[in-house]
Length: 295
Image: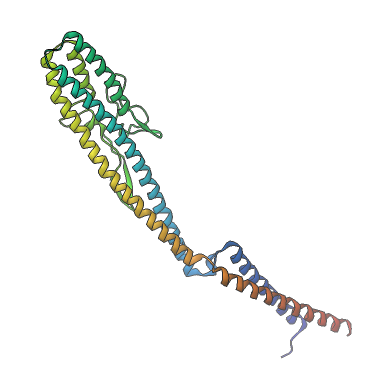
């Protein structure tokens, strides 16, 4: 079969284009460090990479959420620790000045200290972390306790994902812990009552508040225990996510990353092949042109 000059030209151009494409692909792998840059490079690996990257993004989002929840719960625990210190001091004062040997002046001075403790307790309950008031439930954009100590939050509990589709509580119900919803005592009101009793020099009323303060301390202790449990859950989830993200990165690297030595070797071969193809093409086209001119 006779090979025409047009066929020879086309074959030469096709060979040169293939060599150029191979060289460009090898160069891209060396430059980027990626073996799979498009689905056509390895369809099966490309599909697996899509799944792995989606999983990595999902787990990373969960990891960020659990770490943020841990930080916020630690802030809540610090605030509850401060509140517990306030209540412990109020208990000491109530027990001490419940003794009728103290004078009205003594008790009035104690009432002033209690008033200061009330302000400290309110500051603890109005703790803010980032943009959230952490004891406000879902109403977290404003201070949950107003200047009179009235609770303006709700009973909502924020939940955070610890695994795909699995959620855990990430906040404290202040309506239970601080206000006493469900059978407890109102912490701030209890301290206000103690202040009133001290100023009234009413020994019986002062002694009555000792029991209420014990209940208040128990409410705070229960909340701190819940916070501690939640912190452990979220810390474990964060660590588990970190391990999963690390595994996903390893798999992605195995699927998509280029072997540097192999990629460099293939680049050298591609460049050699391209040079050989271009040299052969130049000779072929030159000979064909001379033949054409000699006709």
